[in-house]
Image (cartoon, rainbow, N blue to C red):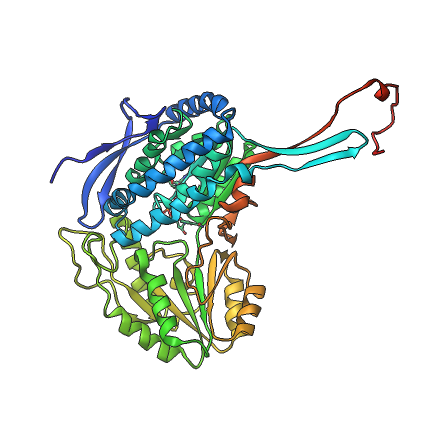
Length: 499
Ligand code: NAD
């Protein structure tokens, strides 16, 4: 086994040369070996990165849209060319299979492509002669230094939900990736430098809570985009806003897939397996609760079980269907739900805690697991498990299924499987969830729409990317102007009125 590689911050366009007081191990989840050691930023280092970003911002905000756009196009091209290389880094530290990692980078790329249209997106309005000889126009200006704090499960795509738009809008960014798998994020960030982004406009600080707290309380951080678990999202929102920052904090999820009796059960079973076990269930849009409207549950469970028998779990570089979980600790936590589900009275249909895995070493594997007869009140239903555990909840009617979904404290994604257009239309109107799929199990909006959930899945008003992203990273200004000539003279202390 080779020595763990050092992974460090990207400050002012270069890898940091200092000595870290604290570090954390980074693993290859497929083998269980430590592959890297990541530096954890101190509050002082974060402060220095913010100050330097602020200096870089003064120049960047005055850089013309034509020049900013050139950087965006060059970055988009570089990321496109290096897609496989960066995806391999995702697989090496996150564990997801290579094809899935390429998919993640591709979805991130979409946001860079959207951001290439920034001249159009930033266009303001102009009204001529609003009052006699008075014109009014609006502009949107950057905020300054913004922080982006991302989770482990999408080390490229989630930072890309924010970074391209923040930069395109004329801000400087301090990005703090997850300490569990920072290498792909750092490689993506290095491409901005290669694309011609001036040093310091994008800083990457690796770290943990200390770095996050430093960003949340620093007076020169204007806004925070956070994605992670609900308790941390709530904390980030409350702390950031208490320090006067604009905050969007996307939290955890418990996504339901409602299957009506008229649905094509083969397609529904395919979708449940793909969305339940893809990326080992470590997706915020993974389906974790399948709500089967009777009388189809027996048939649906049989079809899902049959498909699960064909899944190969193992090293993500070997063409398997599903990889390991991100750390041993997370694997053990997810595995603990297998016994918790049984103890609570759910029926364990497929037990993933034992099995053969296609990998060398001692990886963090758990095979796909299926529970039936799950009910609210059981930990497998109530908790966000964030692993390859799918729970089937049986309900008697559409109304009972809808009530169940709307009573859940999360509201990230949901889907309905049906051939009845009227039922689908009713569902999309009545369900209290931010992203809805109709016969689409993982309804992640394309980049020109905005991504975000409701309730405990998002704290703050603005969703990610799309026009909401442009609004989040800018503030509006309205200018009223008149070019004076002698006829406008005279004293009048009254409130200005249009004439
Ligand atoms: P996490 O909350 O543990 O970590 C997210 C980020 O917060 C990381 O950068 C981490 O270093 C930092 N952090 C962790 N604990 C902290 C603390 N106590 N104080 C301050 N900062 C802290 O989440 P994770 O395990 O990396 O990611 C998985 C979670 O993210 C799941 O809950 C998943 O649903 C959620 N997620 C949500 C979305 C969404 O769009 N809503 C997208 C992806 C992931």
